[in-house]
Length: 115
Length: 115
Image (cartoon, rainbow over all chains, first blue to last red; front, side, top):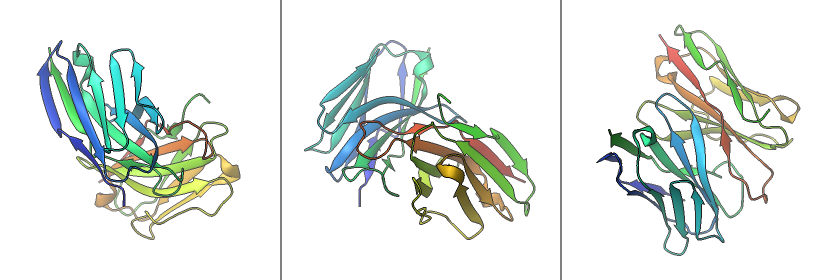
């Protein structure tokens, strides 16, 4: 059974710092990996989607990498801003695609950017 | 529509009452998922619909929970005889057919409070 772990569970840094959030998964037979952001009391916003054949994806100040063989992904946030404060969730989709267990989530990293 | 729409955004109900939560997925998305997120917890899978196939209900926590999807589009999650432990954010997500290189899109959720 796929398990997704996110480290750290919580992180608080001063504004302007670059930071890395980590995600690891136990079964490398994935179709893709998706990073989401969740603001308090809100739903999930998709940030980046990496297909299993890709190594990284970039969007603005965000860069996500994928090392499928080692079961790891990182989300890099450059020049952090207070507005980046949120919970960041990593989720993997198995190679079979879809299915009731098609999306396995980590428990998230709660990020606070101090002004 | 452009995104996944959920209604209501907030619902306060008395213990023992029935509630209905609605999800309108992205047009053309054949897969629809319901998840539940309790305070401080990760996302808990509830039920999955794929096209016209029978839904996978393996995640429903009790027989008080049921869901249907009409015409392969709009879905309704019904909770009968609500209990306080049902209080949570209920999130709906949709996805294109398997094999397409897209991830999941989530709605903003319905925050259910049982008093």
